[in-house]
Image (cartoon, rainbow, N blue to C red):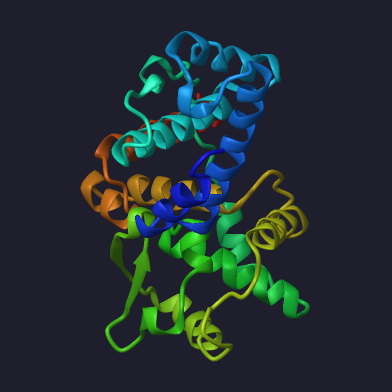
Amino acid sequence: MPYLKEFLEHLKAMGRSPNTVESYKVDLKQFAAFCKDVAKDPLSMDKNTLRRFPLYLKDAGLSPTSIARKLTSVRSYYRFLRKRRYIDHNPSSVLVTPKLPKKLPRPVDRENMLHMILAWKPEDEEEMLAKDLILLLYATGMRISELLNLRSEDVDLANGVLRVKGKGGKHRNLPILPYVEKVLRRRTRDGDRLFSISRFKAYRLVKKSFEKVAGVFGVHPHTLRHTFATHLLEGGADLRSVQELLGHVSIGTTQRYTKVSLRRMKEIYDEVWEDHP
């Protein structure tokens, strides 16, 4: 792909995370394969040919969500090329994002979360690491990338604040709850990063721990972010405060959790009236 390395450096300079940059790289490699199939140089791509790219992705068996992400990557790439004047027109204006299904997240219920926090006694260092991850994810609502990038200097125990670098390089302050202070004190002694593990290992530890300890399957770090937000709203927190804690730019993104919260309240209501007709 022409100017790919320069484009990826541009993304890094904009504060995009390493995982995001890698995703763009993978997406554009697939776009390069499309260009080869249609015998077109990306720099001379025309709109009529580019209209075939979403169908090419669909034929490859990709989901609407994956297609949407790849189209976003291609549009960003062409905007970059146009801004740097490597091309004199932007053909990606014809790319239309497919309609995505609205999936409501399924949070972990309070009983299982309390079991993981209060009843679980880790048996070895790996289980202790897993519990520390779970405690911090649930107590702060951080994205897993934010937690894994957390460094000792981001932890201000004296003032009870965590300084978190979110998407786009934006920072926000999160309160340190008393029950995770011990975790932070233990982890800040382990080196510069609080958790020197890969994203893959973090996912595996969280999933494995919930299966073993609570018998709950399919839990991953982002599930705990959903759970954090849902439990706050069910407890009476206002939407703006939850938006600030999650680091959402748009309150519309946060509003999804109100639907989850209302759904859970209805389930509780139905359960009560089943037991007490």
